[in-house]
Length: 365
Ligand code: UD1
Image (cartoon, rainbow, N blue to C red; front, side, top):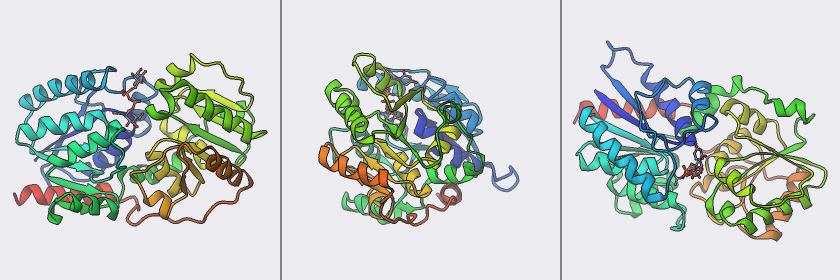
């Protein structure tokens, strides 16, 4: 049984760590399952790629296409050309794609055209915002996926509404949370904590990388000014994604409280989050992690493809509404936040559920 697992970007690495660990619980005698790990090279900086392989003990990929950056079409096309060659040389019983990035969609199309069983981990989530490249990636991928492993009942409902037969949809929980819970005991204090004398529960964490927030200079500046204005004395640690860094170089900022730093390795970033007062972000994955870590979270987006993080978790959406942002930031600072719980099946065992099910499915085909 040969499975090809695709990863290309930072959040993908967090997800495949869990799947690979689940596969490795089998010995050759139990189940003859082998896998190839394909890295598309969409993310290539050490801080977004290799540091995740190291922290999350992911074996080196069998191949790295090294596609790097480019326009949406250039990146997608380059990944497709490489992946077609890869699958011709190394046919698989199933191709597993995770998440919603360009690598996910590009490899999904290739796998399906080569009549390979296509498996989407984190299928079915929808922001209903077609201006996001990720939403297009999700819809294209799910329109050709054979087997869906989902993180929530909302994802199941979306897929069924789109006409997918229930028998192909499996609600298994969240592999990103498997990794979080697995590595929680080994989170590592980043240097910035001692260097800036940050006190537990008294600083905020900020991340921004969505084109809608960072590609427009005035929007980016407005967000940082608002945080600075309302945040007053509180320190805000801002690990800067390369996309955002490229933009920040062009704007003048007078920030006293925002502490800019390069992207952090997984174990350090999650240490920072676990010990902070609250998080301000436009990432989807981080809203899942703050929900499980019970850390207040403000999302600077109008929509979310992860409604459970708002409905039962610690997340609130403020979009581009300045007044809402200020209101929630003040509540965050005084420590007045809604109570929350952990969504169903986000229990650290999702990777195992997926691999167990997939093995049985392939055997019975
Ligand atoms: C991608 C995903 C996004 C995900 C994010 C996580 C898509 C469409 N977007 O966004 O869903 O949340 O990853 O981080 O797939 N760059 C570097 N070094 C790198 C990678 C990127 O400098 O290792 C710079 C390049 O200038 C590049 C820009 O960042 O043009 C954007 O990178 P790209 O992979 O296109 O999208 P992300 O914004 O990282």
